[in-house]
Length: 151
Image (tube, rainbow, N blue to C red; front, side, top):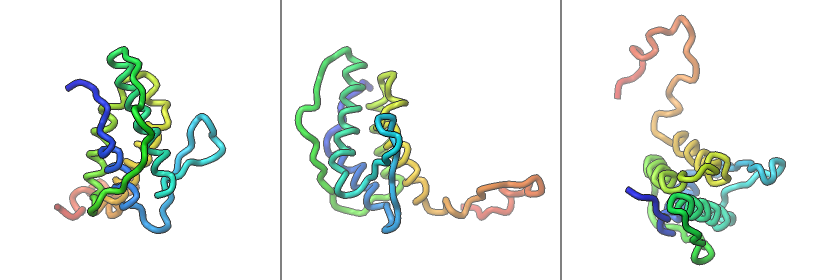
């Protein structure tokens, strides 16, 4: 499958899911090389800017892959989607987006890459049972997987 620019609704879905999975006291934030002292936050108010960053990175990836000079066709405006997204849906959306946006060498250092990693972490932290897993295993706990609940 070739690289393509995802539909606007794909980015809307990513941001809708992330905002829906955030709890009232959550802060999804990241720093980027352009300003390492000021954090960037994902909120309903900043979703348009975040979506624009993701879309621009996707376009840059496709341009690099196909040696094109395409531009973002119009300004990105966030539209919240209806429904109740799950952490797994967010992970799948993020991975689908990353597949389309990772074609150029600047991807790992991009702000979009950092956003995807932060949203991935949010989704993983919301997976059922994730918080019940061991954070550390000592030498005396060699049966850690034998005593864990089977699912």
